[in-house]
Every structure is written in structure tokens, then in C-alpha cells.
Length: 432
Ligand code: PMP
Image (cartoon, rainbow, N blue to C red):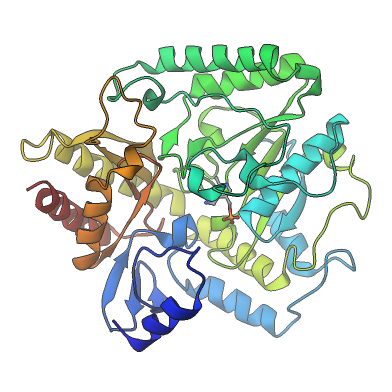
């Protein structure tokens, strides 16, 4: 281990965990170079951020040029050009034409909180100036461990996902959807009155919860419930947006119109930028001066965002996502049915290049819902560690035994095949 890694281990807070004990010194496209000179194929994209590959030349150039124009214009002082140009670029790719009024932040969490704040302000249930995105998180207890109580007024209901009921993917999607909508209806009868409920927030594809696409009928059902009661529907596209699922935004698969959409990660390929979008009439319910932040909508990040939108179009990124996705699913499904590994792989799922392989969990049975499955070090972490030794950076997700594939959206056929080969070898080695 290098002396720099030792330095980091001593002086960087333990609360930040790391998948690889190394320093990444540079990145180009789908590869990163470590300080020990190892070149790794990167299937993490900084958790779905560097969607156009590391240091895309057009994005880097746009940011560099902006550095010589103006780097910081505080959003409550004046507009700046890249902010407005970014809106111009995003307007035509919104999942619904009513989404025409924007507000940029720095991180996904801030944007989620901005969406909640807007929903509460717009529906009259305003509860102060600060909220907690953490209070909405249900993927793992680690994020909120030891810091309760969280923001009140948040109610949860189950996602239509077989884990809710079974240790194998045996429950049909229609039944999962029907049960989940039923449960939601009960929440609105038993826990929070519809007229006191500002919004329902959902990821169209669960990210940290296991890379699970929400069934189309479920999203449509949510829209109906929201319309019936005058509740706002907030779609969190932080991880699933900007081409990750093969459409610009994952919600497009359902045709559902979000009232508020949350964006981040892929919006600027690694420059800190997030945002929310809604219809003007809703956004304008917030009084001037009630929202904003020192760095919100930074000029260099917005300039990078403009370049990303241009690259998405000029390099036909969505077409590449769909072509590579078909190859990835074919290879992973073949692994799922291969005699060597079939008894260890319970599910292959996802959309576009947001794909998961789930392994069987040693601690889960039909009588054990597996809430503590993550306490049993299982196959997913073992496979990720072997992949790393073989030169592939890949991440696990959720409390279950899941490996997620989030390669760059412009990954080549050859690079994808190389990563999949390493993954297959790692699985075979791990189950030996
Ligand atoms: N929403 C979703 C769906 C996410 O995946 C994430 C980050 N993993 C966030 C919100 C929070 O984003 P950030 O880490 O930028 O605060």
C-alpha cells in the first residue's frame, strides 16, 4: 500500500468508506489509473456520475473555458450565461413539456430537499427552512444510524419488489404492483391524510435499493392516486437520469408526468451540479429569496452540463446505451443459466446500463425476510473484491447480495466484453 493511502487512512474521516484502498490519479474514458500504476476498467462511474467517461474532452474543455470567463456568480446576485444555456439544452429533453422551470443546486441530496421544500410550500404544509433527505432514505440503516430522530412527517410504504415477500423472484409483477398500491392506499387512510400529504417521492429505478425498475403500472397507479388527492409526484432521477436507463429519463418508460423532477450525477459528468424542475405555476409559489445557496448552480459546472447535453446528442449516447445494454443482458442471463453458476444467481434486472446481478443470500429462507442479510458477508462483496484484483472496479448495492453495473454510457463493445469476462471469472472463482 502506498504512503499516500496510509496518509489518507490516518487523516480522512472513518465515516467515509472506500471500495478500493488506492488513490485514483487520473481517468480517461472507461479507465482510471491508480497511484501504484495499475490501470482499472471502471464500471462504477463514480456511482453513475461520469456517464460520458472520465475527462470527456468536450466537457473538460467547456469547463476550462468557463474558468477563464467567470467561475462563480452567486445565484441570488445575477443570472450567469451557462445557467441559462443549460436550461435551454434541458428544455427539449424533459419527459413532459410542463417541466419548464428550473433551479440548480450542488448535490442530489440538496436537490431532493429542494423538491420536498417546494412540495410543502406549494401545498401549504410548510415546516421550516431545513429538511433531511436522509429522512426519506429507506435503502440501508447505515445512513441514519445513531442520529435519530429524523425529520417528522415522512411515511413509507413498500416498493413493488419480490424481496418484500419472498427470497426468490417468484411473485409476478402485477401482484407486486397491486399489493404495493393497496399498501399505499392504507398509508393514506391510516397514517397521513391525503389532504395533509404534500408529495409522494419515488425513484423510477431504485439505485441504492438494488437497481430495481418500478413497474410501469405502479408508476401509473401512483400518478392516479396523486391526481385523485391533489398530491404532488416527485420523481428522483438522480441516479437513473441523463441516459443511464436507455432513455433520457427513466420515467419516460411509463409515460408518467412528474410534478417535480430531481436531477444530479450525470447532469455534468462529475462537476458538482444538481437541480429540480417543475411547472412554472408551482415553482413560482416560493417567494423570492426563500431558496438558493452560495454555490448553487455553479458556472463551471453549468458549462460542463451544457457540453454534456451536446455530447449526448452529437455522439448518439442513447443508441450506444441500448446496444451495450442488450449485450450486457445477454451475457449476464447466459451466466444465470450456466450450470456452473445458475444456483448462485437469483436475478438479473435493470434498464439500459443500470443493471444488477443478484446472488442468493446464505442467510435468507422463506421464513427469514432477509432484513439482516447484509450482516452475512456473501457473494456480492467477494465477487467485487475478486473483480478488483483482476482490474475491474465494480460496486455492490442494497442490503441484499447485489452487484451493480454502471459503466460509462459511451463504453465500447470491447470494453464491456472485457469487464463482463472479468466478472464471469470472478463469479466462478467466488463460488468454488
Ligand atoms: N437520490 C438518489 C436516487 C441517489 O442515488 C443519490 C445518491 N446516490 C441521491 C439522491 C443523493 O445524491 P448526493 O449523493 O449527490 O447527495
